[in-house]
Image (cartoon, rainbow, N blue to C red; front, top):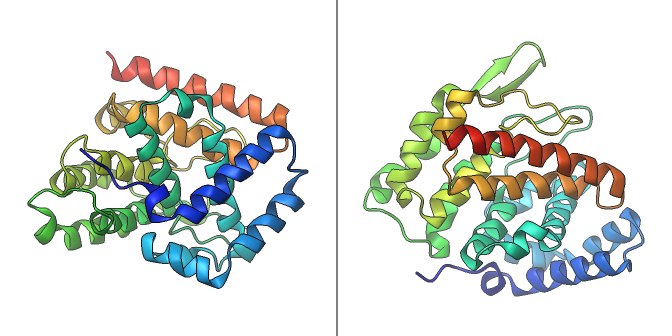
Length: 271
């Protein structure tokens, strides 16, 4: 099956982020100021409009916190292109990961001093709508179930008094995941992309960033398949790496913590 390629849909972005990755690995990126300067020059109004056509919500995402999330997603792509696990993955897994990264924070609303603990579910809702127009095959149920599923996923939120903010409502996960299978087919590339976006805030592995709605052991066994596990591992690795690109010690520390968490998950889902 031929899958839509990020490099075909957004060739300029792909070239730019690959070049950033090359410059990063060769030491030609001097730090965050250099990184942000290059991204600011690349993301012209015309380029932003092009990306919005492929990734709906991209423009709105970039309006928050002085384009913080825009810079972050760019750095996640750079982290992906330098990740050993990505280079060892199959071509299909690489394609899945590129789309997963593009969509994982598309609904994030970043404000100083606040977190957005529900953006993974909202981003997944956008992803579920966006993949079909990109050319990912859908199941027969897509035409009459996408609106109901989008509403369910987008509003799966409960208030967390401990953090005085909303968090994702994991009680809805079974229905959300069943809906993904009905829309795109179980374990299809599209389903795996959406699931990775949906669950990228659900695994407690980063000591510096609170996971306010971590999956329980039972939820892990229900939600994370053997097919999703290596993809979600990569997503968590690059999401963490992206914040620490220019701090090798912290980057290595978080990598070890993430791999340990996913090794535990592997043992749990292989039982």
